[in-house]
Length: 153
Image (cartoon, rainbow, N blue to C red; front, side):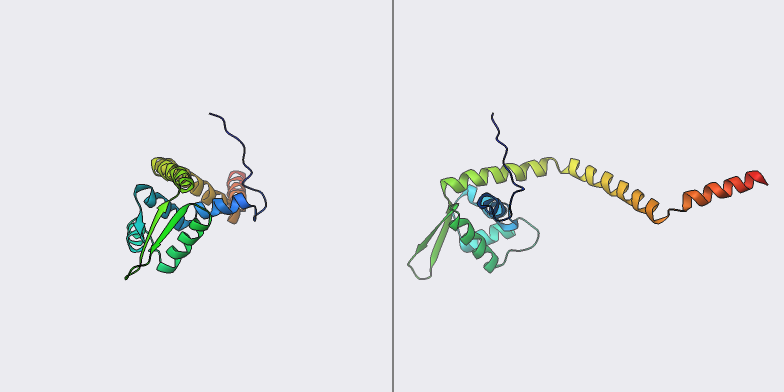
């Protein structure tokens, strides 16, 4: 497997960085992974995304997310001229490729969550000890002085 280095730290408005932001945004991750399974109508997709837990996506935010993904060529929107209106969404080939990568990252994060939690705990404990020592700079010095004074008497 060959890998190429991609500069994701470059200028904020680089086209590839904007696409990365679109694909990995809060709602796009859920939309893309849901659409991997099958096409959805707008309401169905909203229920599916909201069923993933956490905060609920508003109609406005879902519409914006879908529009962004459609503009990037990742999602196809098919509006049928019927009453009531029927709009279906599905992944394009490009969108399926991106969604598979996003799902792999989501599965990795789920699989490695225990490791992440341990790392967070270790970090938080070390940070708390560092902050305590920084806010009590004289505690160790005062203790050493008291010990010396007791020995001298």
